Length: 272
Image 1 (cartoon, rainbow, N blue to C red):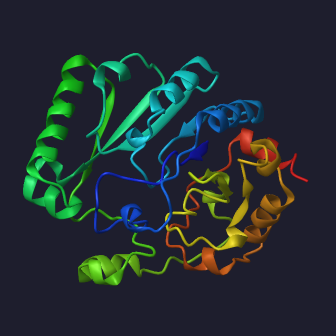
Image 2: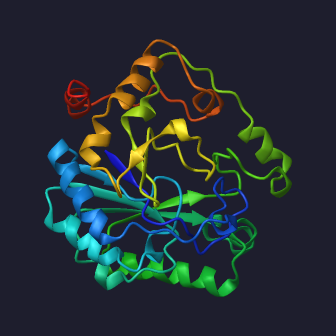
């Protein structure tokens, strides 16, 4: 799987978001189609069959070219594309034409307006719009998965401003995850909306990513070259030997549940 962050903005302002996309000083960033199409072509050449278009941040439907991107994927050899959305900006009829989509709706508040408003800083009109969109999608037969996000949801709170978090959230964020061997997240690299190609899906949730976690940029270097780079192989081998850089040591998303597919192992053998 390849994770691609299409945009660095969201129309919500959730207090628990580690990226706080609407608070950052960076300009709005979106991967243009002129870059996105070659990325997909390279990914297919590498053997990628599955895409994730919202690794952890950004509202996908703020991208003005999103339907052109989905059209390109639909016509390609990619077998499956999944993404999370708050489902506030969707066009149900347009989405019905795609057969490869797996749409996960981040259902903040689980249908309770007071909880939704507290979590997202949005008003009643936005809440009603989302509930109406979900009802319409179900009525028209759009394949969706409503992903419940109650106030007690186990979010990842890395790099979130302490002043905005209740004490219970700080406790979850500060938990220590013991590490031993290779983190499976390294098999899931990620492209950020500014083109940076980073080691794993967890990288880049905050916008202060250290330079040593960035392999290069797809705006100037092909995805295939970055994907098969010696630096990426070196990081994987270091993890296998129990050696972790500072960023990985502080990460609380370490996982050994993710195991390499045949596709991953084949490409690992091609790394310089």
